[in-house]
Image (cartoon, rainbow, N blue to C red; front, top):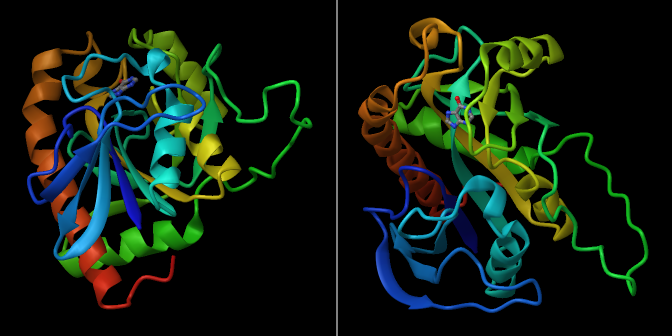
Length: 253
Ligand code: HPA
């Protein structure tokens, strides 16, 4: 079953016919909120709002382990994560949707593995390609069918937050090779790998990164708000098309 993790601007899915909600408990504590079970275009999905349904949990305090564990525990085997990002690459202007293919992790102090307790052997998993290629391909195919323009590939720089970056930090990230910056991509992607979930991210660009473009003099929240509604509408269409493809047997993930 498909799991959808919604970020800022996507605390609910307008096109989801909700069947029920369930509070989940995990060995790692409670997820960000109750799991929302429902159907999109007749396909079963589970939705979870990463920051809680009232958007009260900041990126560094999200219980990423509980979120993914709860989804898997309820039958999810593939996950689309939706995350807002700031655009560093000049082609990633606000309003763009993107499917990153790489990650640089700048976060710290987050519970980043399920193999942390004394009774578990130290485990190092391959993470050369952090996203599930089959899911990325399915998203790209869905976008093409829905006529949604999507930028393929790019490096997601995961920062700690909740503060936004300085212009110098963005310059450094660009030198590192990051194309976009967001606060929630890690450890979520790696934990999904540990749970053997097929996982990919839809990055929704909602602002120019600090010091770039219209953010040259600073990032303005009103600008983010003005882009968020429209870009999340595109995300909804994309998800609808993804599950429709799924129903038609077009997805290979
Ligand atoms: N920086 C970090 N995270 C973000 C940004 C940003 O500019 N925009 C959306 N999420």
